[in-house]
Amino acid sequence: MTTRDPTDGTTGGAGSTAVAGPPPGEGGRTPRRRFLRTAVLGTAVAAAVIAAVVAVPRCCDAGAGVRETYAPLVYLASGDPYRPMSAETFVNRSRLRWSHDGCPDDQVAAAGAVDAARLGSGGYSHRMKNVLCVHTGATYRSNARTRPYDLVSDANEGFLLDLDNAARPGSTGAASVYVDYVAGDHLTYWFLYGFSDAPAAFDVVNVFDHEGDWERLAVRLDSSDRPVTVAYFQHNGHCVLPWSAAPKSGTHPVVYSARGTHASYATAGAHPIPVPVYPDPDDVTDRGVTWSTWDVLLPVRDQPWYGYGGAWGQVGSSRYATGPLGPSAFKSPVPSSWTSPPC
Image (cartoon, rainbow, N blue to C red; front, top):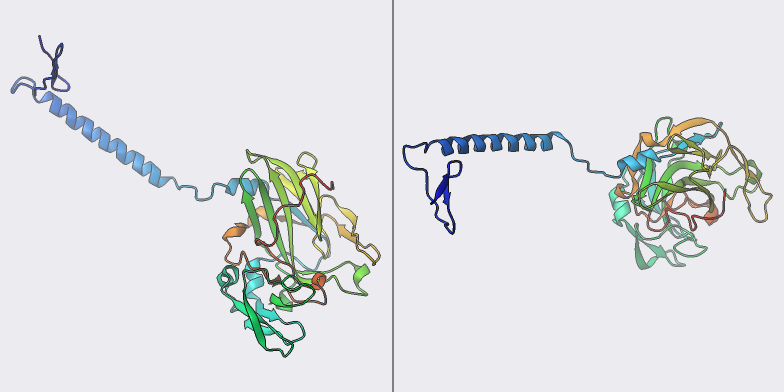
């Protein structure tokens, strides 16, 4: 005998696959009403789900929380006349020039007219000059490694951003901090200053002062983005501390910025700078002005100027007195070793 399920209008029996509609006149309207109620309910639920998805903003930056959590608390040294500044300000207040070794320099873009996107993408180009001061040879783009003394060893040929001297003191407000984040690997925080003023012991020779000063601190992460090691960068080197031993304010590693040079240290006090020939001077750090770097934190690789391979600052008498390279493929965001030397 065949039986009918009144809720779906099908019939079934042993071996039967027949399908029949509800008999006319005998409760035939019940399935339709249930179908309509189900359809209306389903539509309402779907609308609610869509509304909920639209109402909740999607996170476009999954690493933002990690970057902010471990952003350093920096103590700027008391009496330091050079404060942090944003890279955008540095670019806007600079002329883009090409330094020639033994020949007059060329201006590529005037102050206020330097396009950060062209700078980082290689949109500016120039050539070297020969002994007759005539342009010759290969064309070099601004996103190549073109820092003077790097492009040609011991020659001041290359791109430079020549900062307006009046802008060197930096900002009295919150300056931007630029972070390089690779999940499960590292966080590197980049700080920019308008000038690096060497300690008093160097004043006689004055060969280590330079315009433009990029500094950084790096945090090594494990595969779960938990901090493992902190690397503090000073001059041409670095030192490391296990995360457990690094000074912290909550989840933020503490950094002491040296007066004038802005080298990064884990403690306050005097820190010898080993320099050949000259008497060893000291970097000096203390608990001066507090800088919460997470206030203005920007992904460095998203910045239009990222990748510029020239000097951030004027060309001096040597590579040590010339503006440094900035964040780019030419300057590693992490130390050469996460295990040594210890701080």
